Image 1 (tube, one colour):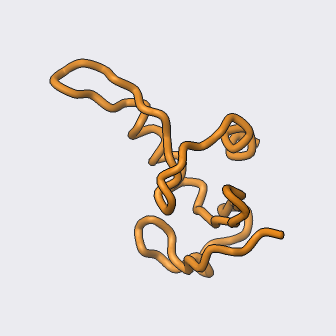
Image 2 (tube, one colour):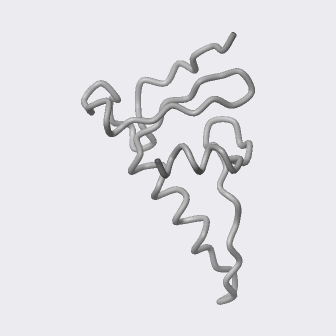
Length: 81
């Protein structure tokens, strides 16, 4: 049984109820369901992939911003499809 994480806003602090269900995605991690806006999540992933330090490209694995746990492969597939 999973519990729902109580977030009513996306990562830019916009209310999630303003967006259609097509632009939202739910991800289940550690028996907790997190709701994200897809565009915020993609922006977060792109930022981590394009990370540079001292002009050296060092891509990082994306993590859930609410619990800091890395996204697994099946999470990426869910985001893609």
